[in-house]
View (cartoon, chains in turn purple, green):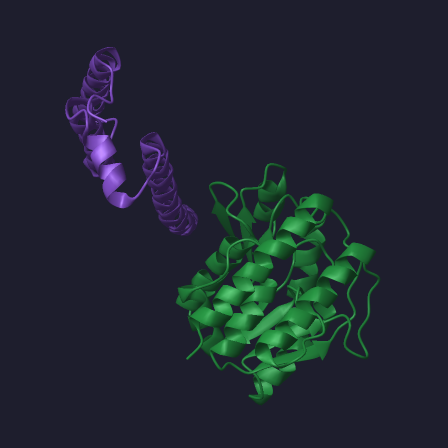
Length: 120
Length: 229
């Protein structure tokens, strides 16, 4: 279990991770992504990068956790991460909905006030 | 009075309510909340002697009703009556609804079409749904309401103060009963006779009905848990 990741896929994954990191950076600079979310994506990419360089790392961690088939650890971690992130997005959407409702009510009240004040 | 696409019925309903209030010797202040209607509801209401609050888009009956509550609370009202704009609630029975409030024997009064003395023809699906809500509420609150989806209600300022703070979103009536009871407000039911809707369509369709049942069940459980003190 010494060399577990072939060189070609290692290079590919490093390139992929770096590109992803650049994409995230660009989105932040353009103001299309809030830093709050970017932190999560950057963290994910860093993990990918580390694993790309540290070839035996995945096997080591898997062995440490008692996971027999190392790649399944990746799937587990990825699925877990995605689920947590989706819950987080639902929470954000709920908050936005609530604020949206208050704003709509406020607009209706202001419209009415404006109309009243314009009446002769 | 929350209204969503009720151009056919709104004029008649507002007129009836105003007349009814005048007969009772109360100030005939009617507030219509337009919940982002896409038909002629707005222009129909503009021609009427009532206040129109117009939401910029559809936010759901709960949020629309809450807006009406916020407006009336800010205006210093002691009592508020909630009436559906589709004409199924009899304006002539507003007096019946207000009686327990005036006596001081209740904080919230619900007009029930199923309590002895009231009555209405209702669709089969709707009756099943109402039965279910009634049973669920009996389970949660230990008390049976006969018409938990009725949106023909009256409440005093104490209940109003609670509603402007928190009020359910979409189809608020059954959840609101749970909320009122859990917050130790006195909820009473009175028998009223309801009409067939005079215009528009029910906001709840067939498939939506099932979703509504599920959503409301969850919401009622949550409301019950949240206010469990």
